[in-house]
Length: 271
Length: 271
DNA sequence: AGACTGCGTTCCGTCGAGCGCAACAGCACC
DNA sequence: GGTGCTGTTGCGCTCGACGGAACGCAGTCT
Image (cartoon, rainbow over all chains, first blue to last red; front, side):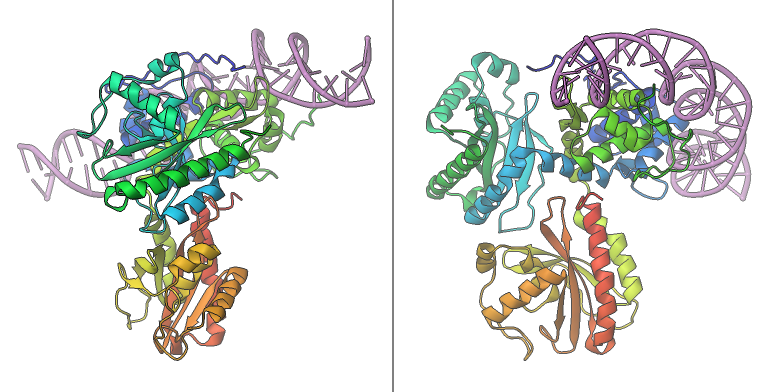
């Protein structure tokens, strides 16, 4: 079913001359390379980009100017460096808006955010990290931190645990790299983490307290498609002082219910 | 023979289509055009894209294949149509961190302040009050005090009304406390206030005359994100003697236009 | 001050990359 | 089978993208 798309090379080595060349139309390839470089560095000058791509300054400039015309990049000042622009967000909005998952989940996310007063996220598994698709801010506070599009470590988040709990042994091994430590509460032992996943599978939800960041508590539950596969994860997260142990129990109930509702809308459990 | 009607060669000056083609590197321009078409349609075939761009099928195919190599687009099935891919979201993740509402709105706020000669404010919903994020002073020498960072009651301001108009019944109830009276014009009846919100929703803007403070008139319009949610409010405010009824109508037009422009930059209503 | 070095930006001649063409391979509906 | 549509692929020709060099502008070293 999955088509085996082989793309020549995706040189991922960090540092040094990182050629991000794929194959296809040369100039487009280079232009997209610029976007990827900017995504990595956050901000770069024309000359810097030219070196990174291995092209002449003027070439890099023309490409970046074209990207700017489409608002995919913008320059910090009138004669300054370049960074990714708002056009990207517009495209991203169009991307998620078309995903039936996000579409179906959004009203329920909103309801969950209203009920709990905390932030709700939807995440999927993408290349050994969690990719956040959508976020609805809680009633309290303004947008805490927009994680949409961010890649988050799998073993230190409630969403990650849920997503991993849907994998078999083999897929788990390939998705799970080294268990980096973020706080003193992060699970770094592979054995302990397997136990944790077993618990998640059994009880149908995951909790992470201070594991990614001290003071951050999150609860997540699986979203399943018609086949019963775990396709996404829905979480509620907020500052630990607002989510004490007794309140977590209540939140768990709400999250599990909401995730089940989304799963149902996606066709899970129909006859 | 040729199934497709060939175009009158060299479509130099952005012919009839909705293409946003500025100037720059041609192939990149076209590739980005494809992304925009996909953002608008959600899903398109190669032939369809070719027609939209005014190029040959094979050209469109090569471009879309290059985009696919970078994961910016993906095809629905093995030999099917194309849609925006996850790569966009990855790029978006690197974007959101740096670009926020205020930054995007500032040039437009400034223009609005210049056009009206009055003070422009940007506010968001926080807890159960309006939080002012940014302010651009009007040309008039008489300047009100700086409201940035201030929490302002929701029911007695144009910004507050706009922000509340984006909430559903339940969220509205929790955000709306007691309707304190500030002047004789303040709306203190819950029923009347609901009617007012309905009017705001319908006409797409809110007005407040002497409701928070006697002699203060304000007009506000909603700023929406890619999903259509009201994320902020933009207002023009000034002394009532400078904003008589007939001038308010003109200001309304300007504020609504400016807010729509900001919304558009945030990804709302992809053309 | 003046020279120098870096930046982003512009102009221009040249040559190869990207274009349109036409033919191919599946699929779906007569 | 026929006929219409897809997406896909070689192949020559040509025009568009490329790199070199020069420009305007800001800092910085001497």
